[in-house]
Figure: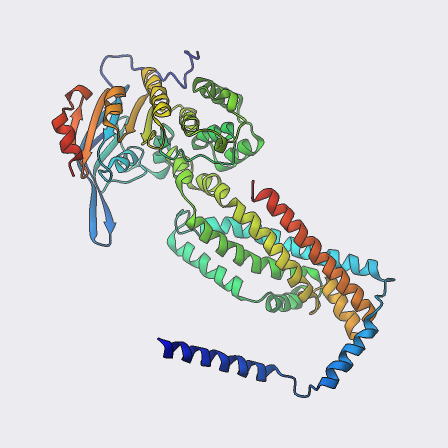
Length: 252
Length: 270
């Protein structure tokens, strides 16, 4: 037992060492780091003349994340009920096919899907929104169908027992029980979506991310600082809103 | 009050001949398990007539809940037949099965109510059997159904003494009050048969007596009641007939007075 533990530790430490060697910059000396830190002096003070442009771009980022999470939930939630193994709302092959598609949607990184959509729909936030919708659909459907399967089916059975259709029974017997999870997951995906939307902006999908990379590539570092501050305020606001909303709707 | 309420006063048959509500003949239910098939019910022959108050007693695992679920077609028998008001249910379509369930109210030990919703919203859910999904959703979210249905909800709430609490959340009520909400939900669908699966198992003595009294009053107004109970004395006190199950088979079927101590011991023998 001890030998096995030692072997695991050695293997783990070797993996850490190999990973660090793999990513270590080829020519990085202490003077380079010092120079880099000194160069950050060019980033301050933030350039405020274009702050409204950054704020408008951040609102696009917010809208992208909001639509991606909302459409993802709108599609993923009904799919989670249809794909539940317990509720039997659809034949087994349909359930299997749906569940397999959720795995595909979830496993495809948003950035890869966004690149494809950028080619199809052109640059901008629309492609990012579609990519996030697809990913969120898979995430919501998988997470919530698992939750549906774990939920007590007492009220569902009670409604079926009085002649309600299985769809009605699922909507009123199961949804209220999993609703706290639905709300919590929605706001969590919204938070994640804001960060993802910023990253997607870096590849041309609009919003504050695109603004940031444009300023960076054109050496407008004081504008970059403004963008970073706006991003921090945006993420802080979404986190604050998310916590408040979860407190209001989940803990009732 | 509400003595003319058609929901709480189902029409009694005109002739003296009792009308069969549910008949079961040669009924058997097998469940698959890792160790092979397990017989939940065997050779069940039962006739429940209009106006009966039947209590089903027996030890845990005797098949009482399965028997109740066979009556409203939630569990399909492996063998034998269930007839509902003279209709053989074996070849029915899904829609016809739902139609039978609409005529059957059911209440459960754990009430199966929506905890974060009001008493009135929970009672309104009894209407979902007769409505489509969209109509149910619109009515529920608007908090308003047809005038006739709204009157029906008012009637059952008053009859069961919970009208004043209609806007309270059900999770703020006592266990006995919650069970009355569950009865109200079943009654709002104007059932011809009320199935009660251990309705007093989680209640204290006083509240249990209240709930049984509610069921008895509904029965006296003509509603047929089939009730699973674990307490034989309560079964003898309230029902007109007792059916005892043991290992999925009927051990006794008769009037309460015929249930001797010897039979009781056989039913609950270890």
